[in-house]
Length: 115
Image 1 (tube, rainbow, N blue to C red):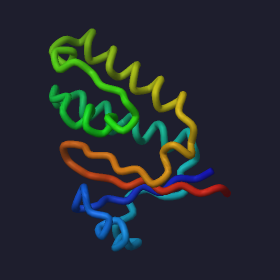
Image 2: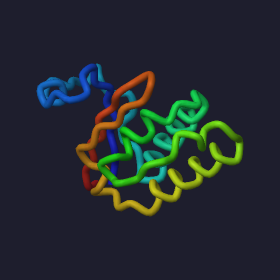
Image 3: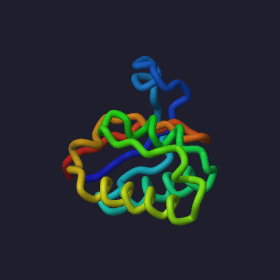
Image 4: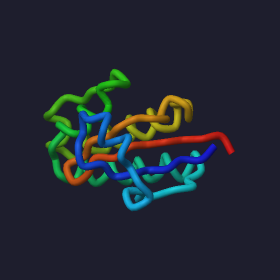
């Protein structure tokens, strides 16, 4: 399995995904573990903003949501990170294929393929 992460400019547009080119690729050829670590790093950065909106928005399709006040304490932020890490590593590779993720500084599209 390998993953490719591309940056897209529009979040709700199928056209934006169809128009992706090699120039939009930010990471490619990632193994399952590398992909999960890359995503965990993105969530770690998002937690540092102390704004839970994009975390919840990205995880909503997976029915995972966090209370807003959790980002107010170090303990709460660590709890979110642990839960996100568990989610990433407990979820099958195929469940991440063709998914869109919104963060405060980027929107990404994940493609995967069997090697």
